[in-house]
Image (tube, rainbow, N blue to C red):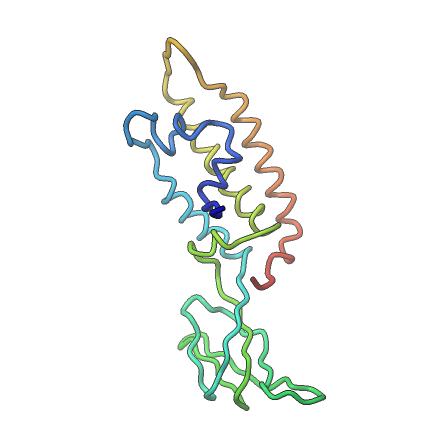
Length: 188
């Protein structure tokens, strides 16, 4: 079974069907009122201060380049198996995105900001946290658009009260999880 993309996980929870949502169009044409990709990209930028990704790199030289979105070095351990303290001194130059390690070979642990490509690999509370924020933003935007447009449909209508309730639940869950956001800085 293929794993679901982040968008599919969003619509599995969203109360309005994908085909009638402002995010995917009306089911007949591919016209969407708003771009879900743009909203998700904006949300990832907003979540950068909350969700960090911890990664590891094997260093063979004393100067090692890190990705441009790396913002901190956690530690470095010499890559020899022996008893005792294996920690080595490491300095991080944020301007050049380079880590300077005293002894090599070593395994360097660093933190970087959340990327759009990381969304499909999130799991557990980190996935719930990101989903709640994006779903809240989706529902708020959809409510704003639907309340500003008069819909006269002969055979159906959208229950805005249900969407407003869903938006409030997502916001409350997000704010509840934000209070303990420090648990989301672990590695993947």
